[in-house]
Amino acid sequence: MAQPRTPPWKKPSPNEGPSRPLSPAQKEAARQRAEENGRAYPNLVDNMWAKKLPRGD
Image (cartoon, rainbow, N blue to C red; front, side, top):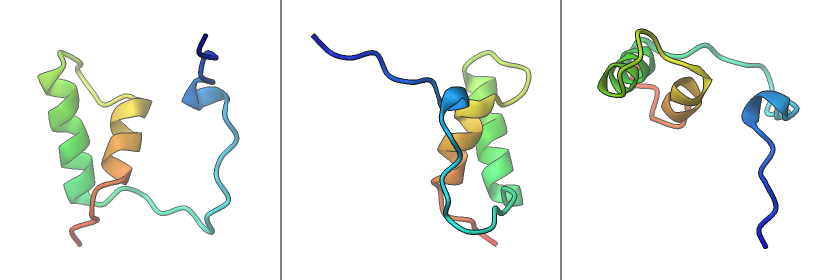
């Protein structure tokens, strides 16, 4: 039987150096994904998904 996964908000932050905010393109992608799924604004999962996209700066 599969073990339940730890939710992202309970996991420690990865130590990948200094954090960088989302680029405007990543923010827009997160907003669009939230809107497509009926949410008024992006949640943690939308932002995590957008963080994996190219920055587009």
